[in-house]
Image 1 (cartoon, helix red, strand yellow):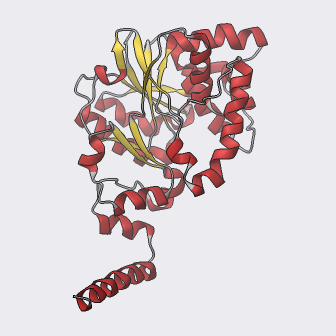
Image 2 (cartoon, rainbow, N blue to C red):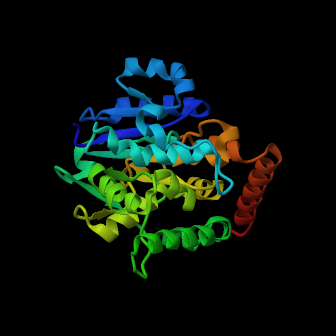
Image 3 (cartoon, rainbow, N blue to C red):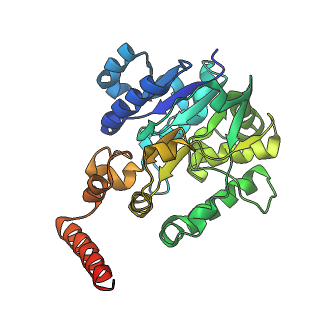
Length: 307
């Protein structure tokens, strides 16, 4: 059994993202950590070429079996819930003691290895944050924060965690199979639940894990900040571009970057490391670009006149 591995849960629409992600893993995986890619059985054939690149290929049925659902909930599709179920149940495969869940639209940007994920053998780091930067962002607060906070509080109530401070993460967590076994045996089973029942109640698989760990302390909690920089919306990405933050800057603090495909999907895989003009050009229309550069030129002209 591997002490730490990477887990990618994907499907056919995200294959171009997986291709890019695997390229970055091949470049930066200095310890040769095993990488498991889990896809629907009906789409397995499309991902077979990744086997030649050292990727372990599994299907949803092989990982989650009878836990999978055929109907969605909370306006989410069955496929969406099943990808959460796969992540939670992967520990039952007995392939890994701990695994880092990587989104398909992530790309690694610097060398990584065992020490980035484990404090010591058998003890993974745990990503736990309050997300105050998102709390103060008007758009994120309006569109996501309030509903998300209420859902997180529900999970805390379910597991019996009484804490005024909410610490969790959006994703890219290092899951401990020991913690997940406890979550199953000590929380789900006594209620007659499966992973499916949990995500039907609140579809936040990472918060179920995080809150159960904080409640049970099955393993020591070695808290760290996120390993992956996620741009949740285009405003965040544009702000970063405007500051002149490049890939080398991001690599000082993060292992990987995600330009969230939920808002950028119509652009295809957006590269975080492209130059400022190329990136801005993907988000702005021709007319908007003309206005931006026109305003820039006007400002420069005014400054020169004032000298």
